[in-house]
Length: 265
Picture 1 (tube, one colour):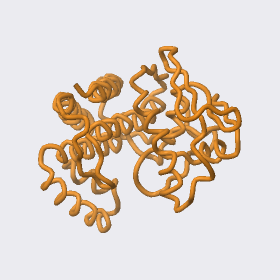
Picture 2: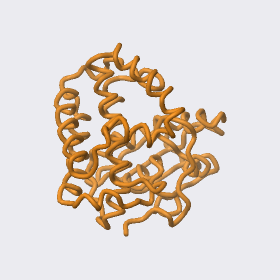
Picture 3: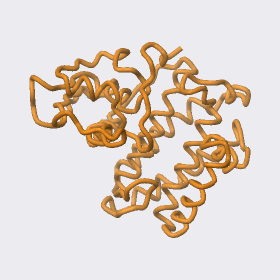
Picture 4: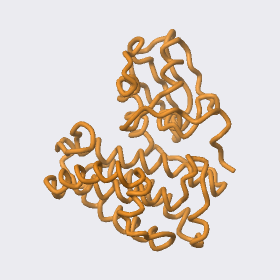
């Protein structure tokens, strides 16, 4: 059983519960994330959920689709415009229902997938475990702008462990996507889970370390909060540099939000 698929569904369900009683007008409100609306969030999550699922059920079709979508994005006004077009202009509660139905089926399918099965993606191939963990991360990260917009303080569970793992596994990626060389080995990371458990990553060190709440660490590596807006304790030059630009998601290098610009209203 691929437990990460259950975590993906749980996070998706939490986001669905937050949005299921909204009127359609609420889906047009801009969030603190680049002015994305709730409709933009759902368009993005649904299209890339479909893509990850298609990579498993029909690899050849996924490869053809990806080639076409990357070319189309260049001339369509960018990813936001393409995602809206791909979703057929669906909005509000109609789009929410489509996203909800699809992720529910997808999660049930991925529970039974061999965790080590290699799947094609926009970047390097990845394991099925990494693929569904990435969908969990995306759902959790983009879900944060919805929680923030609606003024609801998120209650995290230990399902965010997969995001913390992804955050540490992409230490090198943070630098590679910027054409940089890591200034040293990955710092020691010691996190307190929502349950109170302690999660440790890397070689223990008093000179280079990041310590604090797992939720804060996940917010930094997904770039939904600036490090200055968390209670993480960061020690050492390498750790400080990493946390200033940590990026656990694929794509071009992104700049974390400025201090004080992302918060729950």
